[in-house]
Image 1 (cartoon, rainbow, N blue to C red):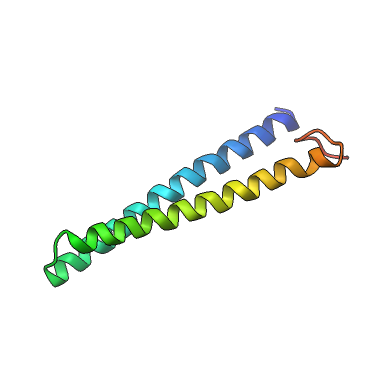
Image 2: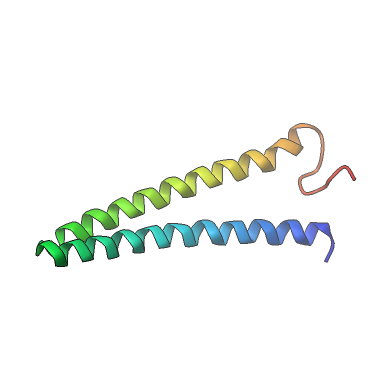
Length: 88
């Protein structure tokens, strides 16, 4: 594969990582909340609170990564270069 294929695979890997990261944060918050609910006997209040908190953190991380990726993709374009091509 040429450099163009490598760039596309890297971008695809970052996109998958962003989505997976959001899911993992939601799952971790839900599991933490479930454990605390079991410990304190407050089922399902803390599971919902921590699940929503995990979702919020996941969405925040997703937006930050998307904005960073957008900035990286538009930077070469602003200087007159095609995205994905290097000066080598």
